Length: 333
Image (cartoon, rainbow, N blue to C red):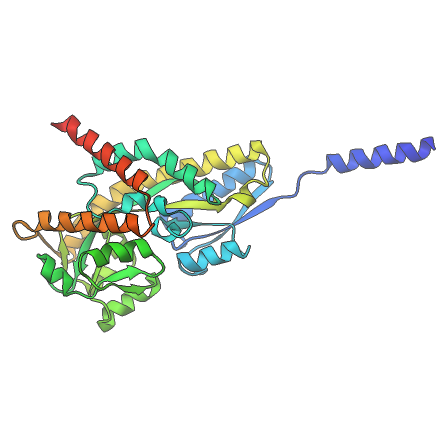
């Protein structure tokens, strides 16, 4: 009996001494291998693996090999992936308010954005967590500008364009429609060919995205009005994240949050450079005709209300954003 008891105790001690099985996170991104995002993500993955003694490891799928945002989200739900670098618009159907900063013509400067984000980022990520994902901060891409094959300087001219919107992004589609434009949904992978064939002749994207995706080679004009703020985030499925011990969660969260913050800071500099690069490569920047900006702002207000009534955004969050913007502008008066 004593021998039997000793064997049981020995077995239990052996089992409890075994290291926890590694939890692998399969992460997809549209960013190509060798890009800033991928270099920083790989470095972060190595750092987390080292600090957790390989209890947390990563496998990355760069360059869009897993598809666009909607395809990636389907694979996350199916368990094939556990997270991704996604645009805010890509997460709209998961948690609509994550797209809050995409409101058309909501901001006049990066300084306004920085002020509002300092007030609201935390609550938006709390909302994302309540809807099944852990986020690690926003990484901006920059202000989106209307770019086209033809010169456009008025609302009527914009309405005559065949404008692209991301497939599976109802928020962007509603916003564009409010301007009286009939948007053409396409996956990001199909935009370049769409421009080449004439299926579309206009996009609203940040300069850095237009260059990275080679869309600028098919465009001739840009309208010098910041239409909306574009950004993304790294998000992982909470069920996978919650499998980690509290200590490993803390390491994961700290390292990845620092990584996203670094991408965000670098993107600000890259955005400013990209504006200059487009001009140097022959894109003609035009200002709107007199009185047009105020007309677009009125239309943007209509788009904002439509986003609320259609359930893409909550009125509570939109009104909070507006209060913060007003507070910032009051400080400048």
